[in-house]
Length: 196
Figure 1: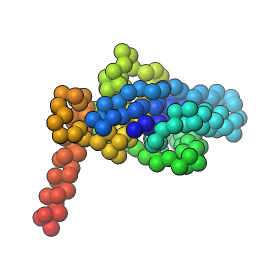
Figure 2: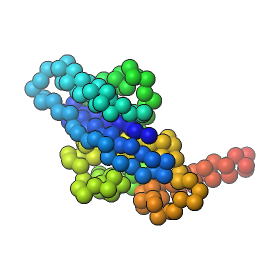
Figure 3: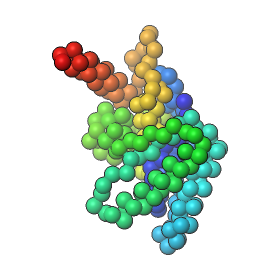
């Protein structure tokens, strides 16, 4: 499944496209950052980023769309810009009838590293490793967009657990950690239902 991930931002909007196979292996298709200068009028910044996202959607034809969920920060101006870009991006996805996933930073960190409080550098290093890249994509917004896309694929079953007989060694350490967490959560849920 092909997933387009967005790390929303008004100055730098990260966009990453990955193809994820049934065994959860991921391949880089595209990564970039759409930039707008703070001196540009707000409506033109939104138009520039929206047009860039739409062009990438039309070029890469993803089956799914994922974006970081807007969360409260101390800087209200940053939150507003992020929310505005998120709205523009969600509109572009909805116009194309794409399934949309909203993921918190801790969800993305847990999916990629197996630890929800991982440092950004750890997440970026794992993204490079998962995709088999020699270097971490730069700037950080680009790597974050790829992490969001991978997280969405793994969480929604686009990269379903490896089929029976698939060697465990074909998964990365992060994939193993995520798979173990899914098994544990499923087992706990079943156990809770049985004890009620």
